[in-house]
Length: 414
Ligand SMILES: Nc1nc2c(c(=O)[nH]1)N[C@H]1C(S)=C(S)[C@@H](COP(=O)(O)OP(=O)(O)OC[C@H]3O[C@@H](n4cnc5c(N)ncnc54)[C@H](O)[C@@H]3O)O[C@H]1N2
Ligand code: MOO
Image (tube, rainbow, N blue to C red; front, side):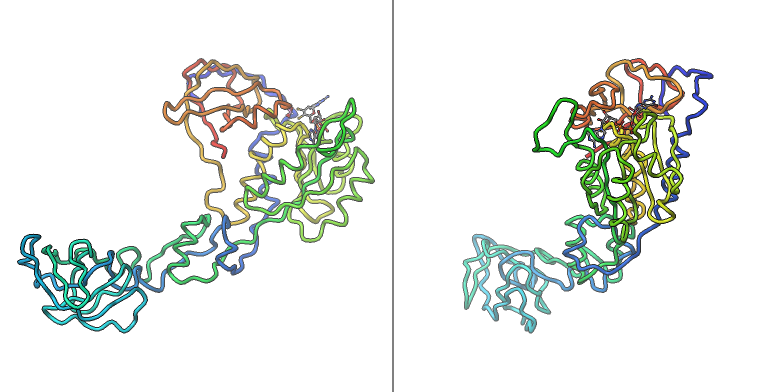
């Protein structure tokens, strides 16, 4: 909800559907993907499908936090830098030694970081506080019981849950999974997305550009956004505004596709290739009460893969992806946090928006002051401002005027 707002009445455009309605329609198209076991090395960024319980405590055994000497603290009560206590050294215990002999009273074992604490020892003296002796060691420090000892289970108790279902597998989470002995994890298969841009004006970046032509940017951008959302993307070469070429590009690629994402050709002109090709094939075209991103399509292509048809204006395509597609891909792949983080932020300047449409403006957020500044105008061709933005401001449909200092919801982008 946005504070300090002027609300307009009776300005809704009757043929526009609410953002929530289209969002629900898109969400209903993409089911959760199947779960399978995947080697840890291939799990980065995927969502864990089941809680991970540790079969062992971590650390698995009491061990030394320092290179030094394992001792009985009672043997060193009198020890002092000026009056060191000499103890005979029994054994060497490097990390990984499995047959660790007990520590006899009045002796020390030389021990390394990570090595098992010998039975009978209750403290470790760092080598720097000794003379480093190999047969006999002189220790100038009265060790406290437990000093420099890492106790079994201090980090993770046996049978404790270390990761919960829906967690995104970050490097540290993969680390803890390996530390408790997991070789594979149950994860959702990423959703498989096909990306196809349309437009006779489009030219491949790197090729010469003639008057009236523009470089194709939506396909690459959306394929990257799909991958960033944790799904896999197959980017097809864009097609001109030609229905036959559109179908010819799609047909051979349908197998193994969960979602077809198209851009362009969905508004009201004479050459709306996506609309012409997909209307009557299971895809409905609507106008959504939002800006950017008004013309939209969704459905199932000939009863098969889901289709989301995004508008061609680059900012409209990207914002529509954020609003409708990204959360759905993340939910389908099992992510608990499917949505962008939302914050409340204070506007640095006044903002006027048209009534009856939910606005998504591009902004820059200062997390220290909690202020958000608009970045670039509302035009849906202003791609460079989107590229520099770090958040989207979400302004509700009924709001038309916001004074500086009003608080608004923002979605934090990466
Ligand atoms: N008479 C009307 N005209 C328009 C309406 C309307 O309701 N009535 N809606 C406007 C809105 S809002 C939008 S958004 C756009 C959406 O149009 P389309 O989805 O049909 O997209 P195109 O016309 O193909 O392209 C729009 C714009 O974007 C550029 N574009 C398209 N594809 C790419 C790409 N892959 N890479 C880079 N740029 C691309 C294209 O050149 C156009 O400039 O329609 C409005 N018009
Ligand atoms: O949907 Mo359009 O995005 O307002 O330019």
